[in-house]
Length: 95
Image (cartoon, rainbow, N blue to C red; front, top):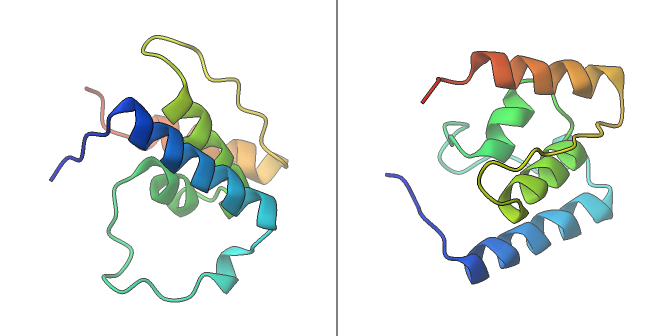
């Protein structure tokens, strides 16, 4: 099921993601997902591709806040996160 959000919902979700990133929480602290790791949202896809939770949250917030056609300037925290972002982009299905 594809969820669409209006502008207000996108702003709130982006703010929540930025707040999560600001906590410095590690992925290991998140705990087990109730339904397994099957979510197809951008943040979960980035994490599965090897991006840290902080970078995944910040990148997803930037994407939500951008307008269609805008370029998102990613600034991952490490080389490993940069490679994860590249992996995510290369492996996601083309629309």
